[in-house]
Amino acid sequence: MNYPSLQNKASLKSVAAFIPENILSNQDLEKIIDTSDDWITRRSGIKQRRIAAEHEKASDLGTRAALLAIQRANLKPSDIDAIVVGTLSPDYFTMPSTACKIAANLGLEGISAFDISAGCSGFIFLLETAKALVESNLRKNVLIVGAEKSSSVMDYTDRGICILFGDGAGAAVIGVDDKYPIIDTHTATDGRYAELLKIERSDKTSNAQPLAMKMQGKEVFKIAVETLKNDVVEILAKNNIKSEDIDLFIPHQANLRIIKAVQEKLNFPDDKCVITIQKYGNTSAASIPMAMNEAYEKGRLKKGDLILLDAFGGGFTWGSALLKFGGDDFKGK
Ligand code: UT7
Image (tube, rainbow, N blue to C red; front, side):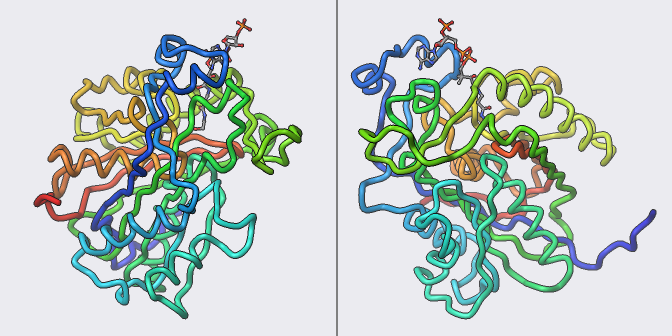
């Protein structure tokens, strides 16, 4: 069926990130669990990750990224008319939403604000939701935020998972601009795999965390690689875009080997791929906007660049997006 083309095209008009100060290196982890820098580097590509301070919650990290994203979109907080947050480490489990807290931190009462639970694919789901809100004329300027204090749901005695995750936040403003559209998004889920990657009550009474993430890493890895390789090929084909047309590939940062598998599938040279996993680990819903922000601040991402995003996470959830970057070129901090 052919749908009538919508008048307004949603556009990603800015990106920003907040990166906590404290570094947890592989060498630090060697002191608390049976692991090695060599193993973590070879199997995941990670060298270090950031850990938020005790008093910092996901909403605090998200608010810092949000303020900068709003400023970079040449807007004021009062111009934002909806906030959608992706997080697996919300301030509260599960109410109030982290989006409510971010709205309050920005001084915005009475606007729509809600969280999306899509694990590490959160940012693609946020993008799709914001695109729909803007293109249906329901909202004008939607703030999307990936905010993670993953350390609050991590069992630091489980070496199969705690080596992977880090804290951080990334944000973007989605508004209207027909010249630099979010061309397409694809999101999908398969709940048959729910048990392979989940957060549940910790069974360790000695563990200070009441909740802990659990993962059957090898199984998740295999399905993630195959799913993402197919997903990126499909979104490019559906939109008649060749991989050589893509200026930057900004994948979710779960494992360097997963990123490399997709990179090889699409024949992307290294200079077309944004990789930050060595510094930040897997920051779940925050990883794509954090990586996008890094490319932006380094001058690798310019207005009008054609970007491909992909992500995979607990649920299972996965997805991809194609867009022209609609932000102004970076002018310095
Ligand atoms: O973002 C959401 C999606 N997440 C992902 O996509 C993550 C997917 N999974 C992964 O990234 C990888 O599976 C891991 C990095 C978690 C693990 O890598 P792997 O190559 O799949 O290792 P494995 O789980 O098969 O374990 C291999 C060996 C095992 O020892 P044996 O049974 O061969 O003697 C593990 O016990 O490595 C051992 N091992 C470790 N050794 C040192 C597991 N974790 C560690 C560790 N340090 N931290």
